[in-house]
Each structure stands twice: as C-alpha cells, then as structure tokens.
Image 1 (cartoon, rainbow, N blue to C red):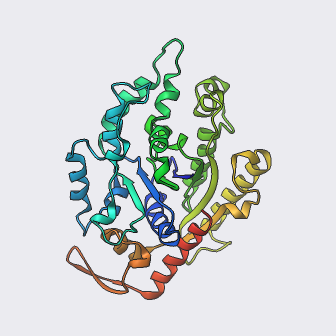
Image 2: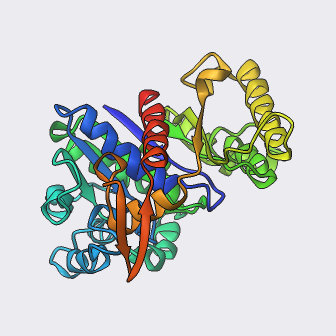
Image 3: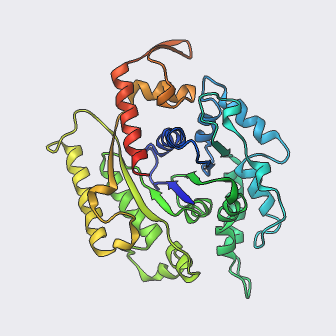
Length: 339
C-alpha cells in the first residue's frame, strides 16, 4: 500500500490545496484504485474542500459528521483510543469514514475520507501526556504513535493508496500522522523561510544535522529506529506557487537553487532517506493557481471538473480563463505523475 503524507512544519506552503487536487486527479487517473484520505489537521480545511468547499456548504457537512455518533472524524476515532491508549480496542474503524462524493458530485467516487476535526487541538495535551508516560515493560510513545497506522491496518483490505494531510507542526498528532506514511511530500515556497523549514524537516523526521546529542534519545527518529520501524522517505518536493516571472537570475530563483543544493548534499550523504537517487527527480514546479485556484477551492472542485467562464463566488463574479485552467491542470498532472 502506498501511503503519502503531505507535510511541512512551516505553514502556508500550499500542502492542503496540493493534496486535494493531487488526490482527486490521482483517483481520476487510477479508477480501479481505492483511495483513503486522512485529514490530520485540526483546521480541517481539506475535509471542507472534499465536502463541498465554501460555496457547497462544506463546513456544514463537516459539522454534520462531527455531530453523529460515533463522531465520524479523526477526532471521533481518537476519542475511541483515549480510554485504552496502549492496546487496539475492538471498534469498527469504518464507522468513522465518509464518502465525500455523496455530498459533492465533483469528487471521484473511489475516494473515502476520514474527516478532520478541531477537537484534535483539545485532545493534543492528553495524547502527548499518554505518549510520554513511563510504564515498565511498555512503550507508550510507540503505542500512541501507531494510532493512525492501526487505523490504516484495520481497513487495509478496502484501500490501495492513502493520502494524509497534516498540521504545520511537529506535535504528537502530527507525528502520529507522519509515522503512518511511507512517503513524504514536502511542498515548499520560493522564500527563505522555506529553505530553513526544509532543513528542519530533515532534522525532525530523519535526525539529520541535529545540533545537540542531548535530544537524540528523545527524537522521533530514534524512537522509531529503536522499534525497528521504517522512517517515511522523502518522495517529492513541489516548488509551490512559483510565478511566471521567476527565473534563474531572480531572488526567488536563488532561494530555490539553495534549497536544491541542500537537498543534493543530503542525497549524497544520506541517500537512504529518499525514494529517488537523482536530485532532479525529487522536485516538481507548481505555478501559482491564482484566480483559478480561488474558484476551485471555493467550490470544492478539482481542476479537471472546473468550468471555464464566469463563476459567482459569494456574490462576486469571477472569471476562469481557459489557459490558466490548463496551466493549473498541467501542474497537478506533473505532481501526480511523480506519485
């Protein structure tokens, strides 16, 4: 089973929008595969997109899932784990899932969703406390870190590919999400903070360039390695929201060159942390979606099903240009081709 986590510990890199469009396009191109999408971000923006977006009342649809019993969200699933955090309870994992195509006809029918939930933020302290407990003869951190892995395993016969959206943090629930993945997609922006963020990402997940050995015994990397678990490998680095004006001589281009150089150095020293062996295979350019992206996300619609022409977005007329739409679609196709 292929399991992709879209993550960056820096916010604003476009991971949620990229995951939404990429998962939908992947599902369209692989109709015989069954996709499971897990929303592990408490903002639950991804879930609202799948459930209809702003114009399709995705927020209300998400609220309906939260109000059901059991709560059909990741928060509901975590609630079921809290009473017995270190053992797998006898629960029906499928009861927490939903079919977004039932409320949003633009979503491919082979996508199933474990919706996000702001309850995650309220649960985070309890989850972290349980993970850090000291219990003789047990590994509480690993047991808690496996919660999403346990979920995926319990429904593994029903799905072929998993997409996981994450919070821009490295909190315990984000570690739970990342540890369940086999491949990492790390979107970056054309700014210097992205350069620092991707360096941090390699430190947090793979323990590279850790400045002090004091923390190594407590790190995500060490804990998984001690349990003989595979760390998720970096699979793709989308260079997101590049503009048509970017070139090798621009300041933005210089930042991207530094990021590519950094990744190349890591690849030479620690090739085992990547799924690719050629640096160029690890990067893909994603141009700015501009107005086309705004319309698509307001309606919760994949680019492949977005109509050219006028759209009413909250009482404001907005135009989707054919050339821009084709450019957006080509960018997503380039990402999906690498998955």
